[in-house]
Length: 217
Image (cartoon, rainbow, N blue to C red):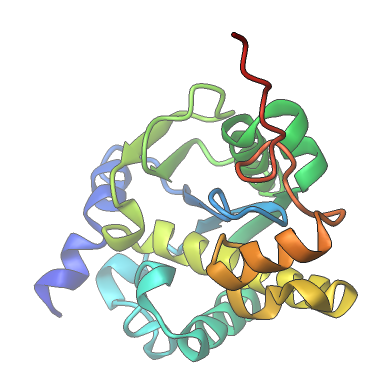
């Protein structure tokens, strides 16, 4: 087994040795785009994989942003279909993002994803900074999606789910090209907004969609 294998179960291993058997990796996709929902996922990998290694179908599992679309789809198919991984996926749409802000919306999605795990896991590994409102005890790991297999699995679930949603929105609003940029602020997307205005899934509180306040002299 490679050193990377052990490193990527390092955080889980520490908790397993404390007697915590079910540890959920938690990650999100879609905090930065100008359109569409933010999606969060939680995934619990079997403890025995620390001894046996990952299944061959998950060889190369990593931060979803480091994977090709084909790899993400293959991993997603295995994670959701193998029967040994517990998982939950949740989304918060653009209207709610505008209402409560993107950070709170992201945390709401994370809690909703965890709530789909029954029973709730006793601990979570979270990508990035600590989430004050998380419903379970947590370990926050900077760049955790590349350092923990559990978070990497959640990263894949969130990314693939969101990309698929954006493809559906592309069919509904083809003039914005969501299939290509997934809602991020690319030059083509900004040009489409300038030409057509915002649509129902745009985040109206995000620049450049947010109305500019008049200058006071």
